Image (cartoon, rainbow, N blue to C red; front, side, top):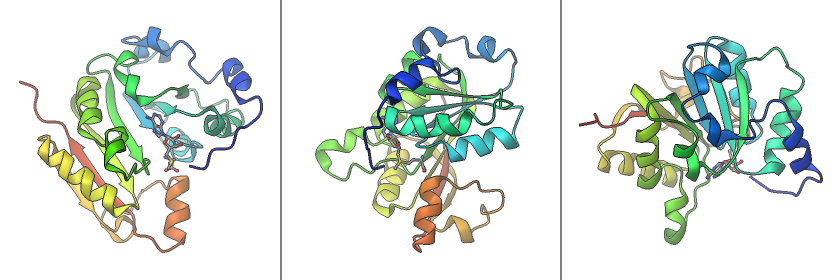
Length: 216
Ligand code: SAM
């Protein structure tokens, strides 16, 4: 994602009602926050929020949290979110996903979406990949029993790395395709901003869904 400094974005975010500002104090209290027992789905690295907003519109009985590291990107999601106050099931957090276990309690999350995550192609920065073994270890700690991750990317190197990492870490891949839009999983697929952009350029979209190893 190209990052431009958007003037005043930090101030706008600080005052926005759809952004959770004290996210660490919410750990273990998300059901209370939403005021219902609905499942909690999160998208990590949501960018401008197109995907998670459409999910929230289509599934009013699921609660959604969109996580984004950069204010200059989050502000674009907020601009869209402000136009749809009726979406009571969608909130945002500006944070680095490295701290995810400080925000969600064990088994508090029912699904994780990772869409077009940054590839960090150099070996020395591989640990920052959101599908790395370090991150998988964090996800295990917050996912509820029987819950999974869905990962999409057009970057084949990142995808193969992520498949290999998942297998090495004992995760169970239940769906996999290297051409999502022509696959059996195409129906009902909600496109992300990057997905629209890269599929228009002719890139194939890779997707997998995977479940953590059983806890002992
Ligand atoms: N998911 C969107 C899509 O598919 O259109 C955006 C994809 S963009 C390539 C990746 C996004 O992930 C960027 O907005 C980036 O700032 C965010 N991101 C990367 N690492 C992150 C992290 N550790 N925590 C939170 N967000 C992160």
